[in-house]
Length: 571
Image 1 (spheres, rainbow, N blue to C red):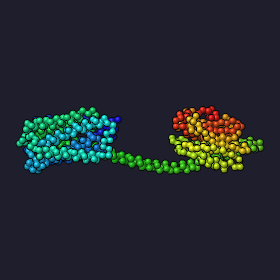
Image 2: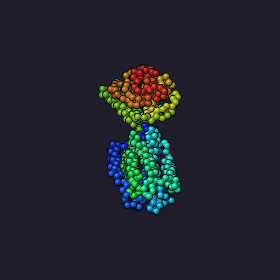
Image 3: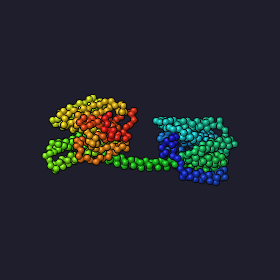
Image 4: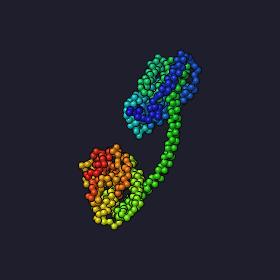
């Protein structure tokens, strides 16, 4: 992207000129040309001298040019374009030199003018004035072409715009002072271009040079392929500038003839075009600023209202998540376990209705556990785009969970063997549920053992692309393939992505004797980018293996959930 395209197109200096703007500018140029052609034949007709005309006319010029310079300097402060700085300096130059021209004009403030003016002073100041402005415009056009090829035009003036403006104003003032000194103190060094209010032959060469400089500036602007609105109205200004010089210094005979007055009217129009467009633009920008402020105010008020509502919802969800941060399925597991024991110990004494009611208790407790798991999935953030990953010291983490679970095992003798587990990166709330459910499964599977043994450990697993492989092993009754299917309940779809699981609800098997639903475990591990395996057979105990996040250099293995057959194999 070039420099011009990279700027925000809200100023005249970088706003592309549309078709309607081009038509308006062309209409103004054609109208000015028609009036010029009508007046040029009468340019030498003498009129009455009006001494007040010069101070009135040039006061208006100074005000117009100063206002235009201030507005352009203001745009430079935002756009930071060297070309715009040069153009603002051009209008400041015309304002300063117009003041010198008015003060030195004869019969205005003094018979021969102020500032030590001679008979040629104002004529030469006019030439310096009308030759200097086109030179500034030419420099503007060349710099604009160069900036359009740069990537970062702002970097030239970043943080130094005020210094650039004051430096430019100082340089312009010195140039004007130099021209004024040359036209006054160096009056005798310059050839005479006007005698007795009539132009001399030397005037032909001088005014031709000045007119040529204006044509050069016009050509430099027309040569640009892509006009901005400012470029377009500068072209109109230079046409009026040419008509001004033509009527005031080429086709007229001297001071106070028709060309003298008409040319200066063109000059006033030339000074007004850009100013009027800048003022219109500023008014439109101010209107858009007000609209933007009102729109932003409404959006902020709406955002504050939404934020307030969200804060209330977050507080409620946080309270609910704290409520279920332990094991909300523990009471349901107890119900299912006690119902199973009643059925095993007293099944022969129960009639059909008793068996049905115990089965109903176990069925409803299983449904309730799945409902709680669904709520936990929503509240704990399993479906959110990003997990709340943090470093977890698993030794302390798991020992605390084991301590809590011991309190719910009653008089049972359970030996927990916990190896060193190290650190892991995981969502703490979700990982807690994984350990609780796997340990509860081991505790439930060993209820018929006189001494239950539950081992928790960890080993390196670089061969499969993971830093660690964790396991929970028990010496319980073991699980059949059917029981594994029953306990995992909800299987991940083969088309599940790494960030979203597509659960497929399995049909409920009422005759299975599941103590713990492990579908939540499967979801959480896959959500962390890990995998889970089960090594079990009836009578030989059960070992659950699982991993969490893979090694950074390892290929991701979460794009498709592992096949259910693969889950049943031991690692």
